[in-house]
Amino acid sequence: MRSWAFQAGFEDRLLQSLRGDYRVLAPVRGTDGVVRLQPVRSWAELSPAGLPLIPLKKVVFPPHDVLWTLMEYEYREPAPSSVPVALVGIAPCDLYALAYLDLVFADDPHYQRRRQNLLLIGSNCRPTPECFCPPRREPPPFDLFLAADRLWVGSAWGAGLLTALQAELSSPGDLPLPAEITDGQQQVPENLEQLFTASAGLPLWREVGERCVSCGACSAVCPTCYCYEMSDEALPDGRVARRREWDNCFFRNHALVAGGQNFRPTRAERLRFRFEHKMLGFGALRGISACVGCGRCARACPVDIDISAVLAALAGGNKP
Image 1: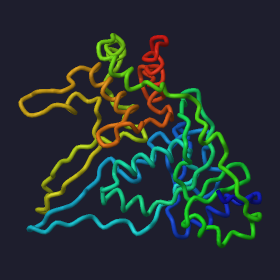
Image 2: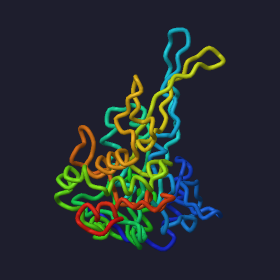
Image 3: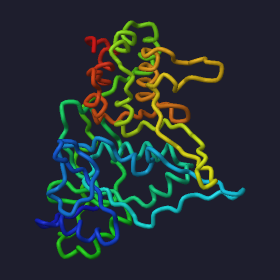
Image 4: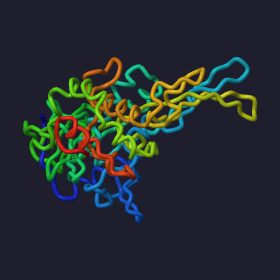
């Protein structure tokens, strides 16, 4: 992969070159200690040791999204933003998560419009005790990736950004990305599908489910959770708006259908449903894990439920 060494201060000059044409967002730790995607003007503002609490999905799959409005038999879609977004300093796990959402929303025009307007500049992370990212065969998607004093180009878009900055770069070389990006930190059990199938009657799900308070925090902060519901709203000016809003498989009403039937009425059933589909994929994506091992769900859970500990228990380890 094409790579260059860069001079000190290159990161800030890269940000400066972006600001005229992009809305530049990066993980920034606020005074309350929470890391959020925020506008930045210098590289020193970035928080390399922290993932944003609400991940990248909010940029391409907003929590509240008007899909169209109807007025006198005419449907109108909201005008897309003309300003591209540059996400800077993004950790590999969040880049892998975006790759998963790209598969989920491959045919969704609203997602695709935002995604095609999204520049990705990745950087190395600092894993926390809750991180358990799996090993990868392929690098994550990015346009540029920065690690230490080198950068890598992942797209023609990224290569074009370097045209005005060539004076600060070394001669290009062909180097792989740093191994820690794809090596991962924890192996997923090879027989996970069989373990889940055999676990249906285990007390594990009831015991962990009794601790769960169904707050949905784990799903809200998960970079690949994408359940949503649709609603139509009659507006005061006579229009009707169709909205897509984040939903949550931990909520009791998520599997409630007409007639009052509920496919997953207990927390234990909802917990097992979420864990299975997070680790083993769902629908057409069965077999592709949606978990990137970022550890957000464990950090956000108010009762300390940790998906990696549940996996370890399934594989014969201690109770989570």
